[in-house]
Amino acid sequence: MSVRKENQILILILAITGLGGFFCMDIGHEWGDDFVLYLHQSHCWIYGGMDALAISNAQCMEQSQGVMGPDLYPQGFPLLMSLPMRGFSTWGFLGLKIANFGIFVLCALAGWRWMKNIFSGRLDLAGIAFMMIVWHPKFWEAADRLTSDLWFSGLILVFFYLLNEKWKNVFVRSISLGLILFMATVTRTNGIFLLPVWVLFEWQRHPCIFGKLLSDLTCGSSDTIGQNKSHPLAVDGNSRGSNPWLKMQALFPFLLAWVLGILGGGTALLMDLGHGQIYIDLLRGISMDGVWDNCITYFAMIGKYPIWHVANFLERDLNLGPFVYFLAAVFWFMVVWGACKNLRILFPYLVFFLLNLLLIVFWPNVQGMRLLFPILPVICVSFVFGLQGFWVWVSRFQQAGQRCRLIPRWNLNRQIAIRIVPGLILIQGIATSFFYFQRDTNEAFSTSATELYRFIDSHIPANKRISFHKPRLLHWITGATAFRINNDSITKQSTHLVLRNLQKRKIDYWILSVKENSVGVSKALAVVFKNKEFVVYQIL
Image (tube, rainbow, N blue to C red; front, side, top):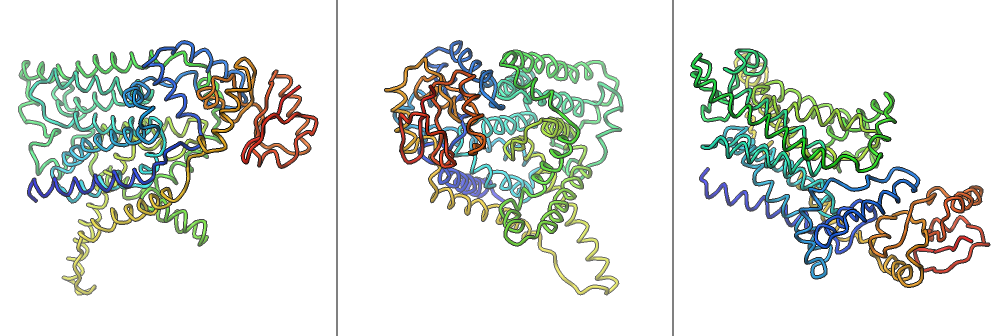
């Protein structure tokens, strides 16, 4: 395929990606006030006030009931969003979402180059893996949420690409990788897992540093590398020699990986320390039962990844749960097969995958597919390698059957698979975009919510304590002193206990949704505001 045609196809793929994500966006934002703290921190990067925000949010986290979040999020994503936040009054949430998703699409270009390198220029294989990422409905859904998921995943793809590229200047290469590692770790703590990827990659490229240890472990034969001597992991025979100068040349990037990786990652980790006790408190709650449940949950999520909405339909509407788990097991089999057959190529990335997976399954709170975003490229690449192995196996079986006349003559056209897998992903993505386009996801800034914010801003003093299910959102919009106190599972029998708890915590105003209020809250409470969605009670 010519470079021009390749670029045209790539532009078409990314154009579909951009449109798919755009049609999932709403002009406002859904409930969930994680995005608020990110944007509040971005605002502080522009206008100041980060220390005051840390103090007020720490008070909210300590005095609220239930797990909500840290005192401050890592500053990588807020710093990024501080750029489009300067024009927030002009383009609003929609502009921020376009900027966030647009940056991810640009980072995906680096992911395409990385996959081309991994598959040694095989555009058909790289195309399957690439479209499994950029066309997946969960990535398109994420375009409607202003969180660090897409930015962090994009940084991972950029790091993988830079790691695989051939550089003329080793020092510039190391500085670039160290900078991306720092940016990833200051965005999310598990960005530090890129350090072992970097070190292991250098170890593989220069086995002369450590003799035959790594070569015997992971540098076995690989058809993909063997056919392409320009592959980044194709080791020159001279590098195995005993020439001291060659060893020093090989040792230099390895040492730079350690030094710059530790400096970048360690500095980012230190910047994230001290943001509340929430993570320590969560980790204290680890139990083996919880870890086992998380293993089942996340392994099922990964297994259902290529058939995400189809799997939900089969389970919920057709009651075909066992069949879905069979398909998930087949997907996992392909992933493991592909990873084992190409361990030489994928070894550093599989370490990154395993470290993140261990962190996720040991983390007490299930967060959903978004935590899997950074490792999905490794999963998809392994799956495509598994498909490649399956094609080879079927071809051999077909040839043997034709010789023995045991099976009829037939031709396996893998172009069918090239179309089926991305096509299935795209159909689900289009369905998701159509669903979000018709649905109003602007819950946090609906007409009723805006009326509530105006009332609080104009009628309730800032020093009064308010209980609301999204306290960070209320504080950002109105400046109110807000907490989350027992706004869930209200019944007629438990109302008096809830009220006693509110009084004990010195709450002055209690905001409920009309749905929550429908179970019957004490008539003795004074209603100071009510609209279609919310009721505000004064606690006397």
